[in-house]
Length: 578
Image 1: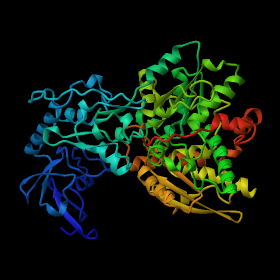
Image 2 (image 1 turned 135 degrees about the horizontal axis):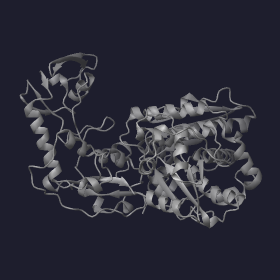
Image 3 (image 1 turned 30 degrees about the vertical axis):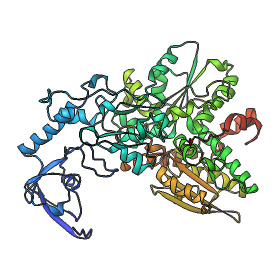
Image 4 (image 1 turned 45 degrees about the horizontal axis):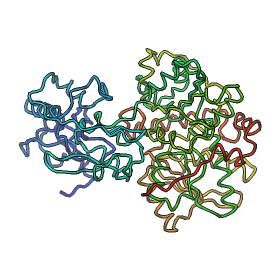
């Protein structure tokens, strides 16, 4: 059928007329008039596959059940979403899914946040008409970041779409037919031997408990109970605009003060801000860029703060590793500084320092355990928790998040600029770097600190910057599928850029795989808005003007990109293509 998007179509859904553009799906049209059609495989940001069949409706033209997520109103007469036959069909589909699913909700990682469980409750399913037929499958525990429990997979395909279409990683796909149809890795290898980069976008897409991050909360409880340890915590910029969602706050609400208060009540000795080390990253990375521009070597320089991206380039573009900045991520810079500068300053033995990170990212768990991340003589970051894991700890402690007062981060690793805050958005690292590099080169402040051309959800953003007569061309890639486009250009010698920012997850860290379920493009946009507000409201908006960063160099590191800075704050990469 030819679809004219300028043509309007009017249909009746449950007797209610609705007018929508030609090509609108039944599900979208129903939503417009306040009718929610249930689904398990449908996700607004992913390809429509109609695998689960839960969204069936009746149509007077075809006189049969049809799926609402992929059929358009142009091909329908009157539509009914809530007849006895539809309810019976949906219930039967759910019962068939449950028959092939472990009945261990109390033990499941997604208990009370499982979309299958929610629908079973809505349909009043208390016992199943079908005998159980599921077969247990051993969990994949082969890596430090993620767990695959395919006994719980409902074969909705959302994880595959996130991995292949959104990220372009292709670590998982489909295999088999009929009753043997399943989602798996190539040759059924564990994730640790696949192209997986541990971005966690498959976890974010999964409606059930088949995919989840490794739970490290008990390690943190144990550390907090150990009186011999000095336990500090750092919080990433994107966490403060997402953690509130776990406790009923609006999507993207800024919950920084309440988050700090909650962490103190959990028992951390000090609560610090990863935005501080984001500022430190900009000072180091900005000076590294200037050095490369001067020498003309290994350009374009590419950012290195996203561990999923680092995993991706090591596995797919090892020939271009020299282009990646040698700077560690803000998480790892913080760990190295906390276990050296801070420990020595507070006269705490380094072996008694225990550093916890709260991150929106699953890949950070893997990053913290990389063997090169031990510049302090110990593992620099001991445990990484996702935003979801922090929420779990807060609930377990009985802390009423909404009733908490607003509290401030501790010093000396808690003061940050607005530039550090926008690290959590796609384009934010580039904008923060430009604010600093421009002033270092020209000796003048930019006319405006807001570089709007670097902001937004576009897949690839480009800009040209005039540094006192020297033009620097930059690009920003949003997500790994767009990173591939830019990296292929770099490999072919067709990339006319000097600096490239790459964020692994769509939208940047605000859309990280460890953020609250269920993240959509609209929610990522709200979180972005929150971080730009944090930046706008900051007294300091340039990383190199953070007085605590200046004190760190003056008292300890010496000069940016100097010997000690390289020893603690820079790293190297490994060819992992084989």
